[in-house]
Amino acid sequence: MLKSLTIENYALIESLHVEWNEHLNIITGETGAGKSILLGALGMLLGAKNEGQATKDLTKNCVIEATFSIEGYNLEQVFEDNDLDYESEITIRRIITPAGKSRSFVGDMPVPLTTLKELGSHLVDIHSQHQNLILSSEDFRISTLDTLAENRATKEQYTTLLAKRNALNTKYRELEAEYSAARKDEEWLRHIVEELRAAKLKENEQAETEQKLAILESADRIGEALTALRNTLDDEELGALTTLTRSQREFESIGENYPEGANIAERLKSVLAELKDISSTASDESERIEADPEQLQRLSDRLNTIYSLEMKHRAESYDDLLAKAAEFESRLASIDNSDTELRELRERIVEAENECRKIAEELRESRKGVCKRFEEHIVTMLRQLGMEDAQFVVEITPTDTFTPTGCDSVAYLFTANRTTRPAPIERIASGGELSRVMLALKAMLVEKIKLPTVIFDEIDTGVSGRIADAMGHIISSMAEGMQVIDITHLPQVASKRGAHFVVYKSEGRTNIQRLSEKERRDEIAKMLSGSEITEAARKQAKILLG
Image (cartoon, rainbow, N blue to C red; front, top):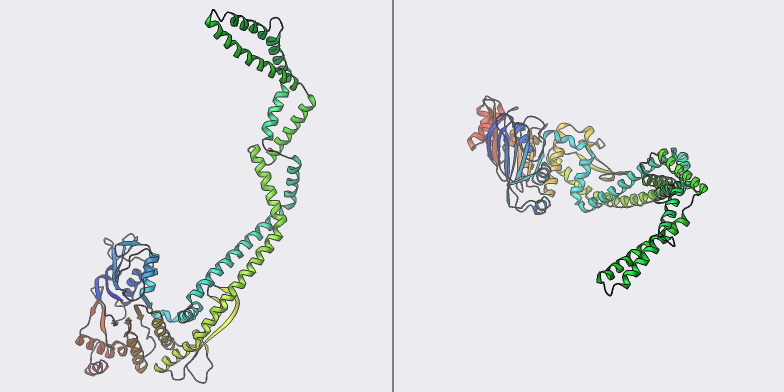
């Protein structure tokens, strides 16, 4: 529950601090006194965006802080999921600078706004006077049934399957668009692929061909150099091999008397081995390399073909050309296989939709299972609220459309008259009737959800007299098992047992004060008679207060 709320420098509030009752808290005050500002500050604390200028004094920060007692509400997992330390009592603080920047804390731990919203959804339910219109939202109507049906696990299963189905649908549309665009270029693409296939490009072919061509273009000069080298080495009389062989033998023969001669002979032997290898290589190369005009032309033509393809496809290199050829092959293969791929993907979509539909049917059955109890509860409470002939019916209609909430259309049908057929509540219910239906609905929901705190902001709009007194009794009975903060203009509601606060303006600033018993009696008398409090109003206030 909400133990305390402190607000500094927010809108018309300079500074205020409120200690709340753990059960019923009544808030009254004149129109324009700032009751909505109080709720706005609490909404900001629980993650609402700073839509306007929150700070009144632009030289100071706006600070909103609240302490909650949360023991016994099973919120340990929520704290663990948000990487927060759980304690039975927590303080939430939000600071907004004059520049509009926001910082939020749970205890001493900085947290993002999303965490505040997550915690807020488990701590406080704020029902504003405009929220009666939420009955026109089908998502709200379905969410109400789901809360009563306690089908969270089934909903999560459906959500997972729907996400899978939607992802497959997205992929199908993207592939279909991609293949449709590709087919427009299919004829050109097929021509390109055939041309590249005919070229029979191979890895490293360009570099190898360029090297072969360079050798052939210099074949005569290379041959002359090889012949000259062979003559230098192999001449029988003056060749280097013949001359050095004689020297080697000579040094070998004098090696016994001249130790260095043996060393020279050994070194000459090594040189001779290398020169003989060079001579052999020169001989082999002379036979291999020879001028061949026909091969020269073939290599030249092949390079021209490669160069032409590189220019045509704007390839930066031969490897880039090979990569583009592979890409063209892949695109053409995709087109050729597109019908098969789309058909297989469509089969997976149908399978996913069947799974979704099966779980959606389970959701529908769980919702139908609580409809009768829900209808009876609403009708019983409406009768307590003076609507003896009220009828309330939940109508669930299966649909073929997959929505985030399933395959159901849910309508709340209502009539306040026995002779009138029920119709969608958002079309026929008056403001006072909507208020009573929402109170009945909220009373049932908060009991199921077991929220620590619920706040009603003039939920009694549009009612008066005996009906207002009945609404007050329902609100008071709700407060027996939870904390209720009720903003009201009705003395019948304000007189119910609990803490009574009045919001007022002083020197243009919004303030709040907890009333004593005498002050409370005067406040209710004022609500009954206006600014001039009559003795009759005081007597009536005393009666209302019991």
